[in-house]
Image (cartoon, rainbow, N blue to C red; front, side):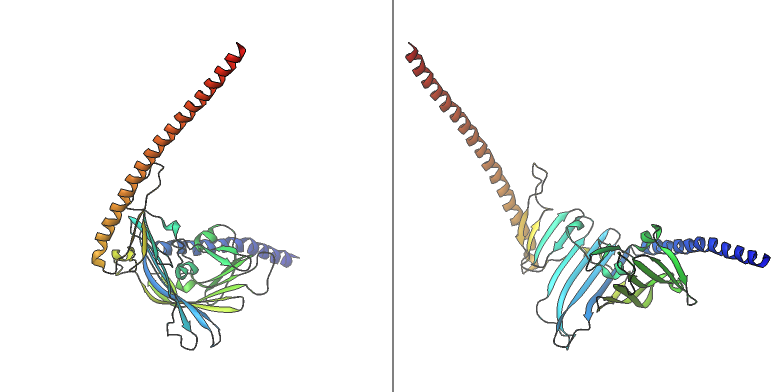
Length: 356
C-alpha cells in the first residue's frame, strides 16, 4: 500500500506541475514573438503566391507582392500576372496592379482601373493591403490580421503573441527534436525551439467538432536568420480543400530601403483624385483636385497647378451659384407670401361687401 500511495503522489505532483510548465512554455513562445515583432519595424520583402497542382491546359494567376515598412511608413505593390502552367516563366496578358503607400504625410492608393487617390495623413483603412509573407508567420502588419478559412469564413488571428497570451491555447508536447506543439480546439501550432520558436507548421480545424484532418495547413521551410534570433521562412506551402499553393520570397532585406519608396508612383494616364490639395468644405469634407498623370513626368507640376486652379474656380462658382440660389429662394418665398396676402385681402373684401 505504501508503494501505491507513493506512486499516486508522484502522479499527482506530475499532474500539478505539467500545466504550470506548459503555461511557462507558452509564455516563453509568446514573449519571443513580441521581441521579434519589434525587430521587424524595418523590412522590405518581395514574394510570389503561386497555385500548384493544375493541369497543363490551365493558365494560372501568379500574385507578385512587394511589401515594406520603415517605422510608420508603409508600402505595398500588388500585381497579378497570368502564367501558363506549361511555361511558368512566360507572362501572359492581363496584368492587374494595385498599390498603397504612406510616407508620414499622405496616403497614396492605386486601384486596378489605373485610378489613384491621395489623402492627407494616414488613410490606409481605404486600402486592404495583403502582406501574407509576414502575416502567415505570425507577424500581422498593415491590415493583414486574419486567416479566413472557407467555406464557413472562419476568422483566425495571425498575431501569435496575442493568441498565446489569450489563455485559449494549451501546451501539447515537446519532441526530442526541439519542436514545441500548442493547440486549441480549432488551431494547432508547431514551433522550432532551435530557431527561437519560429513557426514551422500550423493546422486549422472546424469549430463545430473534432476533425480527423485539418481543413487548412501551413508548412514553413528554407529558414534563414533575418536578424539575430529572428528566423523567417523563405517558402510557405498552403494546403486547403485538396489544393496547394506556395509563397516564395525572392528578396528580403532590412537595409537599403529608401524613403522615396514610400511615395507610390502612379502610372502615366492614371486618373487621380487628390484630397490632399483640395480645400476643406464648410461641412468638414475635402474638395477634390482631379487630373491625369502626364506621359512626360516633367509636365506633372504644371498639370497639378492647372487642376488646382480649376478646382478653386469651381469652388468660387459653386459658392457664387449657391448665393444666387439662396437669393432666388428668398425672393420666391416673399413673392408667395405677397400673393397669398393679396388673394386673402381680395376674398376678405368680397366677404365684407356681401355682409353690407
